[in-house]
Length: 257
Image (cartoon, rainbow, N blue to C red; front, side, top):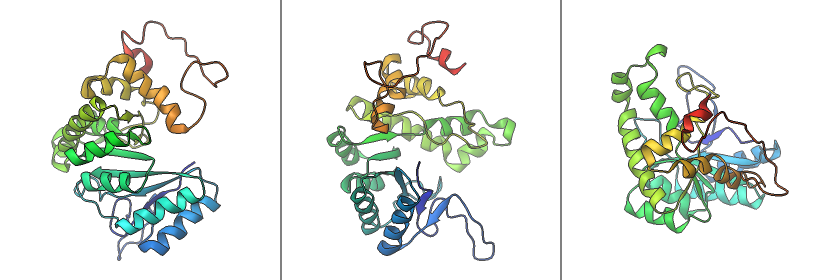
């Protein structure tokens, strides 16, 4: 269980307007004291991990890091004080660097990483796990005509630019041995729940993974992200064994049925 996204005023998931109050799926907190209080509130309510939004709005501010460094540090320290993991929405290169600098455990997106950020990710590859949530970008760009989002509109929103940069980034991250997990950003009208297995195919087509490597992103690395004895067929570990009509290494699309 995770907190709602913890964001700063005017950033991703702050859907409020002065003339039109609206509750979104985030908790807005500004400054160290509010951030600490909000993290503690989530822990009091029984969460297992904390999520903070370091980058700006999707997708017009995706390349900006808008949460301040002292706010990030406070969130991470408070979460870790209680033995909880913390994840971050971080598309911008600077936001990825700040997440790594202050010990964030799971980093979502990492789309616009520069060489310095890639070096930092490689240095932290035994500690951090990344999840691009690539399926949403692909679905919004190429599969959303039937819900009123054309490829032209998605491109104008910056989705295509984000997809191209994300693919380039994760090709490099994979080469450097950074652990990349499937999933994330399913449940939107453009990208329904139950389609997560398509990420395995995306990781092959866009990130240069072999079928086995992509399957391990969904199983072995997913288990490592959960910090549980799951994700491999191993004595004493918890596992659901799926019977598949065919060889998923030869055709990972079998797992989408």
